[in-house]
Each structure stands twice: as structure tokens, then as C-alpha cells.
Length: 263
Image 1: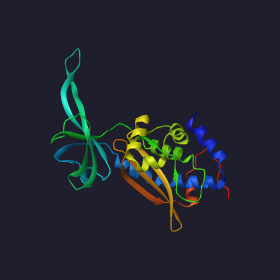
Image 2: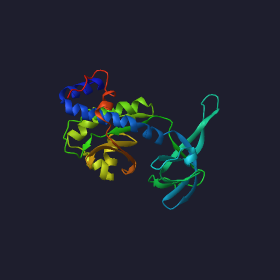
Image 3: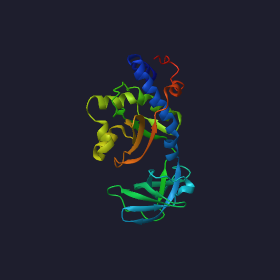
Image 4: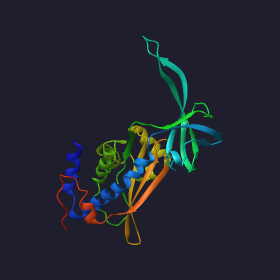
């Protein structure tokens, strides 16, 4: 079923108040999306040291290092050659683990080492990178911790549109993901708080991470809290929280096929 048709159908079923709240969430995330894009800019670097479960890499703040980034650690192997010309085309690579950055200095970063079972221990001069390819992710349904109880089923489609537009992410069809949660095969709370459950459901979709949108209220203000969950470890790497933009601001963010909000 086409994505636009699904989103339009969900809109038609929603009340004007629910539609307005969904618009506010979508518009608020649009203001936050660039932070996720910046956190996953392509980068190449080297391991400069390993100390137990910590790894130090030469990707610091000057080169775009940020707390919460997750980089693959790899080791170059033998060259491979063109079968007819014999010309060297590149080298094989073996992924040894992952580096989850937790502290950033100007010229280096300290990261948590997440080894891959059965692979050698990383060492100085091994490579680290965030891929130049589009990063595959999934978006959970909204976890609504407020008392508004609105129909927010179309919100993942809005977030997916914003992330896909950046050309940095490839988002799993929210309808497919939503069915897994609607059928009780997974719960948003599990992805957010139980690492082993998050890793298990990640394998189903073969993603690198999850976006978990949470709607919450503090002292009369409604916030959108968005957390990035690693598909490798199931742990939260970073999150951003913003108060919902006013409804008047959200109106400009509507999809072209949607009618305006009426009070």
C-alpha cells in the first residue's frame, strides 16, 4: 500500500484536535532532524589506543566527533584484484567491533568498545568509520505519556518523510514496523528500556538503529523527546527534547494532500 495513501487514510480517521497534535509533533521533529543528520555525517579515522573496554580514536570535535556516535571498527586485509588485468582494486575488510563515543576532545574521542564475538581485539591503526551509504533505521510508534490520548498513528510517516528527505537515512516502511507493535510482537517501552529486546527486533528489520518518539508533559508544557537506540547494543546513544511548536507553526508543515486544521 503506497505510503502517501496510508498517511492520508490515517488523517481522515483522526479528529481535528488529534490532527493538530500530530502536526505539532511533525513540525517539532523537523526542527530536530538536522541534529540527527549531523550526528551521522560520514567520517573516517583510526584507532589510536585500546584500554580494556575503552577505545580511543582520532575523530575529535574538530573532525565532527559527537557524543553518541557509533562507528564501525575494521581491519584491512589482503588485496583483491581484477580477474583479467590483475590490477589491485582494494582490500578486504573485517569488522572487529564498534566504538560508541562517550567523550569528545578537540583531536580525539573516547568510546565504549563493543567487540564482535570471535573477532580479534582492535588495536592501534585499525580503521573506524561512519559509512557514506545511507543509514537504515526504523521508527517506533509514538509513546504517549500524556493524558491527551490522541491518535498519533501517522506521526512515524511524518518523521520518516523528514529523515528520508535528508538523503542520509533509509527508513523502514512505518506501516510494516507499526504492524509488529500493533500485533504485540514488540512494545515501544521494550525498545526504549530493554537492550536485549531492542537488539532482537532490530534483527528483524536489519537496521542500524531506532528512532523512538516520546510525548511527555512537564509543568503544563508538552515535549517531544526523541531517542536514538543502537541496533548493535540496544542502548540509548543520544536523545533530544523540544517543546511542541505552536499549532500555528505546525500548520505550515502539513503534507500537500491534507486539509487544514479546523478548531
